[in-house]
Amino acid sequence: MTKINPHNRCPECGYEVDDASEVGGSGDRPEPGDLALCIRCAGPGFYELDGLGMLSLRLATVEEKVKLSQDEEVQAVRERIEAMSGWFTP
Image (tube, rainbow, N blue to C red; front, top):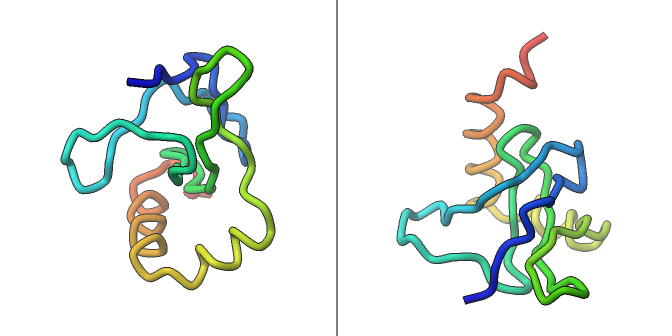
């Protein structure tokens, strides 16, 4: 099992990301290439192996963001995050 870098920050808003969970609740841990949505800003990032062999987040590319914006499941999860996050409340 690959360890998640404990110093991860959301590549969109900088929120400290100290853990990850799978949306479906299966308990699966992330692997390189998996999508991550920030629990604070719902911004997308992708896990990749860093120089220490740990999973770190990278900013999604413009192309990846366009593709994600067309994925109904991803958009539904983002909407749920936005609804429960105080970050979006004025």
